[in-house]
Length: 276
Ligand SMILES: [Mg+2]
Image (cartoon, rainbow, N blue to C red):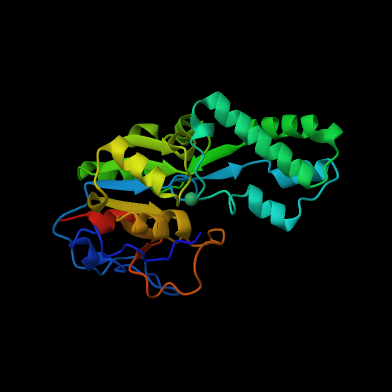
C-alpha cells in the first residue's frame, strides 16, 4: 500500500492517547484485560470498521463456489484482485456519484475479472445472476459482545462512527446485524469515493461526523486500512485481533515497533476509553 506503518504517529495524536497505546497487547494465552493507566479523557469518537470488527458472515455463497459450479477456478492472483488486495486504497470518486454508477463499476470489474479468468463469455450473465442470488443468501451477524460494547461506549458519551470498505448498501447490511440504532454516523467507501487506507475516506468520515483526527480512536481488524491508514491520518488506532480470526494479509510480520493498542474483542475498546 506504500503507507509506512506508524507514519504520522507523532503529528496530531492527542498526547493523552500515547499513554495507553499498546496497553493491552495480547501475548500467547495472555488474559484479555487491560493493565494500562486510566486515561484522564476518553476520545470524543470511536471510528469502527464494520466487517470482521462489528460483524461477520455466518452464511455466504462465495465467488469461488459459484465459479466452481460452472467448472472454473479463480487463479490466485485474480483472487487477490477481487478480494480487495489490489482494490483497497483506491480512489473512485467518479464511480461514487450515485448508486447506479457504483453498481455499474462493480459489474464492470467483475466482468473484467471473469474475462481475465478465461471464463467463456456465454457464461458471464449466468454467473452474475448466481452471484446476485448468492448475495441474498448471505447472513450477516454481529459478534456476540458488540451490542453491549457499543451501548457501553455510548453511555460514556462517545460518538460511534462506522468507516467501512463496503458497497453502496452499507446501511441495510448494518441493519441486518441489528446494530443500526447503536451507531451514530455511517460511512461506506462506496459513498466516500475512496477505500481505506486512502486518506480521502478518513477525511470524508471526519468531516461527516464533525471530528478532528486527534479526537478519534480508530478500531479495526485489518492492519492497512484500520491501523496504518488511520495513523497516517493523525488518528489513534486500536488493532483488533480476534482469536481464531481469518489471517490479515496486510499485517507486517513485526509490529512491535508500532505504537498501537491491541485488543481481542470490542469489549477491549470499552476498557481503553473508560475513565472511571
Ligand atoms: Mg474488517
